[in-house]
Amino acid sequence: MRRSSTFARQVLLVRVGRRDGAAVSGTDLVTPDHRYADRQRLRYGRLDTDIEVVRPISPALAPAAPVDDESAAMSIPLLPGERTTARRAKFALVNACTLSSLMLGMLAIFLAMRGDVQIAAICLIACVAFDGLDGALARKLGVASPFGAQMDSLADMCSFGLAAPVVVYASLAGSAPPAAAAVSCALVAACAAIRLARFNVSPKDGRFFCGVPTTMAAAVLALTVAIGVPVPGLVMVAGVALLAFAMVSSFPYAKLARLLKLPPWLWLAPVVGALVDIRLTFALVVVGYLVSGPLLWLHQRRTA
Image (cartoon, helix red, strand yellow):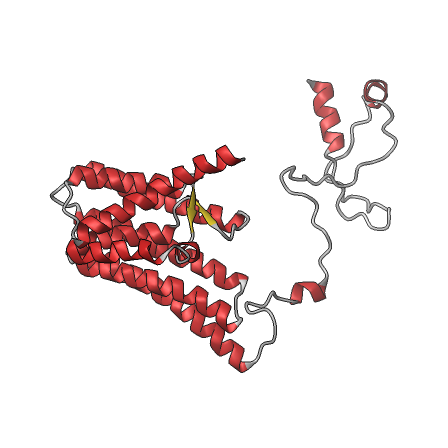
């Protein structure tokens, strides 16, 4: 123990006031003990070099690279390309639509807390409209940017990942056990976060979505509350949980542009059914869309 402590003192020796390799007398904080120098040379090797300063280095941090002043001063622009007044106005218009979707989602939460669940559901439907509008305007006006994509993702999480399950939970008050309703609505929030994060980092497919889109799931929930689909509370809870898992599934679901290419008579059937019984028609369309994912997945596996 004595040898080890003596060696540790020598290793951690710090000399104060040393400049240009010359030590100022009387300023040494610790005077090395040379009684065990021969033993240390024998045990630890030659110690011919004095250790001036020993500074701890964190193993979790890599050595910092030198920073160029010019590169540090440069900032990444929010709007790539030409920064004219007209393009900035278009950029502001697109992001105003995104913020409108976010604010409507917050309004839906406040209305649901007051018990106005149907008005809150209408606000969610407006969120879906603004969510589709900002992307279309960004592409039309030529102001699409990574900043806008991140803004859209954050607004979707607020409006569709948080506001939609809050509205559904408020609508289930008194018709389903509170614990079961809370679990199913929390699943919607968690799966929406996973779905949006996965969408941001995954390669895009022009034909199909991987899982049910968050926007479409929120639209289904909002329309279910707005039109008042007459289903028991426990069935509604199970449907909400199923929709949450469908968002994070790997089943392919057709995009809206692909659905618009369907034959006109296929669109005529839901329109006629809505005139007869809008609630039943809506339920059948939702079930048909959810089932289409596993069917397409099986068809792709067979043809692969």
